[in-house]
Length: 188
Image (tube, rainbow, N blue to C red):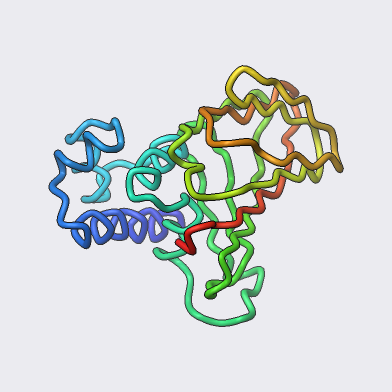
């Protein structure tokens, strides 16, 4: 399944780019990613990392959740556990599960399992046009929001401020699991 999801994500990136009438070079400039890397991703010759997907989705003006949902989800009010799209970052082995069904509701619910010792940067552009909460289910998480460091324990819930470069950091040896609740203000 991982190869299938990566192929669908690659195809979706190309659709998003082409639907905007952008060249590879234009997307590269907007996302701050090399043209060669985007070319490899669109051809499914390279698997994008979480940070790279965040940059690309930010350039499109949509969330990473929306990008992956558009690649994966069928319409319907019930999204069964076995059908929830799962994606693994090839660099950090971060495991992302899209929990919410595809609908016209402007909300995404995503569960993330972050392995011990992981550090996943996300650019501010990936948080544009959205409000978000992080709800830590298990383990420990450090969420670095600009210059502010939030040390979270199981059960803690954090509302993110205005878009800022950030990092999801698991300084422990054990994985942590958290939910990201994203309210898309533009309906993207």
